[in-house]
Length: 195
Image (cartoon, rainbow, N blue to C red; front, side, top):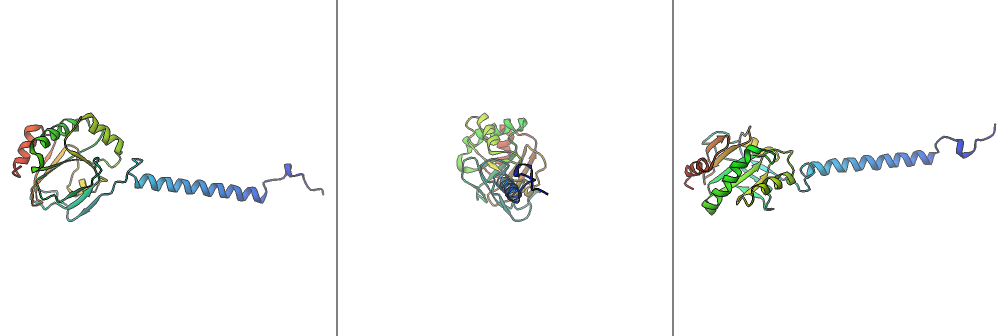
């Protein structure tokens, strides 16, 4: 029996090795891609490094947990602030969240450093780009936006967007409101903590 010419033979051992090597490289690239997307907030290009310590604080009167969030400004938001603090839980795609986010900007301008106001993007699937777009639609809001991965809103028992939580300077939950607040509602909420 005569040997077949190389063009008629099946794949060589070298061809199998090359195929396995290529498959290995593709699998490794896929794994690295998945890890990068997960670590950087679903393709946002920036990590979402959230930390929460302490007990959940869903009820009025409860002590708020310590937490930190990355923000659009680039500086992490770290709580406790030792000042009255208003947290507004929203999402970058939420149309009903726009009026309160605008009202927060006007309120921040009037209270200055007497209180801390933060809009918290509570949708972990939002990207930094969608949050920047939301903030851009507001013009110059005057307050910062934090990016949550789900832990901060869970710690405060937030189950709905348009939820506002007010904390006093000692770190107690003073007010919880579900539903959009206008300028007067936000001022009344902050008045409860003397801001």
